[in-house]
Structures are given as structure tokens and as C-alpha cells.
Length: 215
Length: 243
Image (cartoon, rainbow over all chains, first blue to last red; front, top):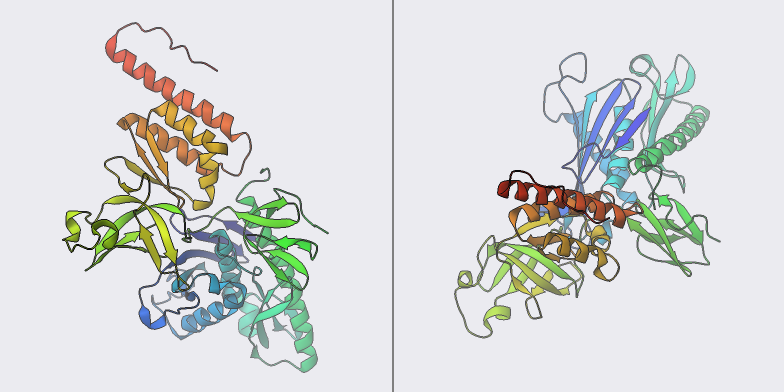
């Protein structure tokens, strides 16, 4: 897994992430002036998130434009990031998060969320914690971590999870498939452990941007 | 108890200290612990811990002096871009008093002004003012944008850094607290100042910066002096540059 922060000049914050066969680029703009009065909030910033898959990111050309899955992922990503950000510090403004999947191989929503967290930190947006995300699941009868595309397609369950590592609070929990309560516990534990490891990579990526020696 | 040292690089969520300490900028308290909310360098003063962000937007504060550009003219006010998520309003009464006059006779769209932040309300509506020494419209010059948190570094202790640049390049330089810098002088000198300022922004978090800035200035100006003298004579002795 590799994460690099600050890869885009023009964006306020950005991150590039590679994990397995996934390649994801995230740009964050904000807080910035919000022109759409309808969604503006007088007491806090709003988060507008767009998850998009490039037409060339998958084997069969993905038609450009939002589809139901992209809209769903955009929503859950905003929801997963919202508890971490100090939105009250920026009334009447917006924080725009753009997640572009350049190459997909299963687990893109988790990778996108992980990278978005790094990009938000890179943009200097105050947060309670980074959000780290990882999926567990069941494939071939076993509870496993971070399913690949095949394991996801052929497997019995997929469980994307996101946590704020310091407190262990869960900000994303979804399940696709079938798990017994015991399997669920096991998968959740696995996923949380995975998230904590991913959090270490996130922190390193952010710090590396400014070099080892400083001050 | 404190878990980090002064000038450590921290990220959002890092635990900095426990209850003994007070929260400063860039930190928050949770469950008897003080944590960082930003990517930045730890600053410990007595029992107060702050995190100085490496990257941030300018949030207007009452009393700040800022440089803004006029973006809109309305019935009794101008709207200005002050390099922030929030735009600023300059009431016409600040310029005209009680008389009613055509606003664009005084300032037009695109004009750049040096103003004071008079008030910021709870929803961050920003009111600007021109009453004060040195405030007003800029003529000519160029604008350079830097991250607002690097402004103190650019100014230096008691203005040492910015004065060094002003003296060497013979330019007028005004630094707004919103990260906008106005520079006016000979065109080549303006460019030299611009390059130095961008370098300071890039390396603001490192040490030994003052010396590197001085060397960069001498290097760039050494070149400038050489170019000018070449125009005048054929054989020019090497310019004597002081260390």
C-alpha cells in the first residue's frame, strides 16, 4: 500500500493512494465560498463529496457520469468524514471532496475514504482524527480481510468499515451478503485492526510531505 | 504530562498532552487529553500547547489588516475578495461619509486596497474599513499570495526578514495578514522579491532560513547588477559581493 499527500498543485489538499489493484486520486477544495443557498448552513460548513470511477478504471468501459452506486458511495463517504471534521468553525462554506478512481479492483470505497482523509488533512482542515477505512468479509468459507475483486464477486459477504482510530468510533459500517453473528464479530475485529494499520500509513504519508527534518 | 516536544510534526488526532496543559490554537480537549486538530508543528509556551498549521485558509479576525481586491459594487458598498472563504464588505460611508456619490468614482472592480477588518459576526460576515494610517488603494505593483500562517515568518522578528528584502530590492512591500503581499518597485526587482517570498513560503517550517534568504538575495541581485553593467561597458570586473 502506498499513499502520497500533496500531489495536486491547484487543490487545497490532495492525496494519491494505491492498494492492491486500486489507484485513487482525491482532491479537496475548501473551506470555500458556497454559492448554492439552498444547502448552505449558517452554523457550519457542508461537505460535498463526489465519488467517480474513470471510464478506463474497469475492464468493461464504465459509462461516464454518476450512477446509483457512485451516488451511494458519495453519500456514505461524506457521512463517514462528517463526524471527524470541525465543521462549526466554517459557517456558510463548503468543503468539496473529489474522489476519482483511476483503476479499480475491489474495495474502492474504503480506499477512497482513506485517501480523502489524507487529502483533508493536507488541506489544513481541522479534524478530530483521521478516518481510516478497510473492508473485511467472507470468502471461500473463511472470514478474511480486504477482499480482492474475485473474492468480492464469488464470496459470501463484504463488510466495509471506517473508524476514527484514536477513539475507535465507527463512522462507516455496511454489509453485503450473509454472516452469522459470530462471523460478524470476527470480521469487525479484523477490519478494525486493518484500519489501525492503514492509519499508520496515512500518518506517514502526511508527515513525509514535509520531510523528516523540520524546525 | 506532555507526550510531544516543541516543533514536533503532528497530524490530526495525535494526542499531545494530558489535563495539566491548556489548549491553544490547533488543538482541542477530549476526555482529559489535549489532541491536535491540524497538520503542523507543536508550539509549547509554559503550560499552553498549540499547533501551528503548515497549511490553512485565512479566517478574518477583527483588527487584522488585509489586502483585498474589489469584486462587486452594490448600492452602498463594495464587495472584496480577501483570500478567504469569506468575502468582505466595505461600506460606502467609510469613504464618502454622509454624502451619496457614485461608488465607482472612488473604487472600481479590480482595484486592490489595504484595509482593516472592522468586524466579523457569528456567521462570518466580514465588515472592512479604510479609516487608519496607511490604509487605502494601491497603485501599480504586483500581488503575491502565500499561506496566511507563513506571514509571521515572512515578516520576521520585529520585521527583520521583510525589511531585509525591502532594503535589498528597493521595493515597497506591504504584507496583509490574509496572506496577500503587495510589492512595488523596478520590474526586475519585483520579480526578485517574488521569488524570495515564494521561497520563504516553501521553507517556512525549516531553520536557518534567514541566512538562506540573504544568500538568495545576494545571488539574484548579483546577477541583476552584472546584467546592468554589461549594458554599459564591454569588460566589467566581477561585482564585489559582501558575505
